[in-house]
Image 1: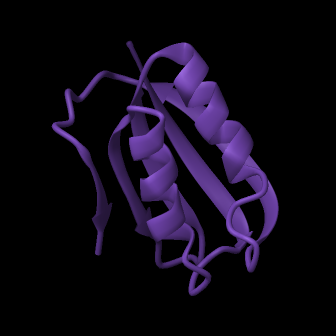
Image 2 (image 1 turned 30 degrees about the horizontal axis):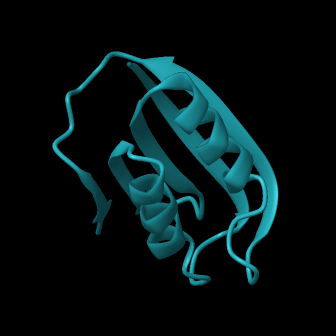
Length: 89
């Protein structure tokens, strides 16, 4: 199990990015959270197996149809043992 932190930059707020991220993460069996940041980015922390995390990162490069993703940054972090995958407000 790994823990990654993803920051998505672009037109990613107000375009259902959080809801679609949650759906994708649950589909992949990941745990963690997604939230909008004050600087206009979307922050995702996710835990799971490497293949599922890679799939989520790949999806983030596109996002929902109405999003315009400029960049995706990924870092590793310590396991937090999240219980599920939620949208933080």
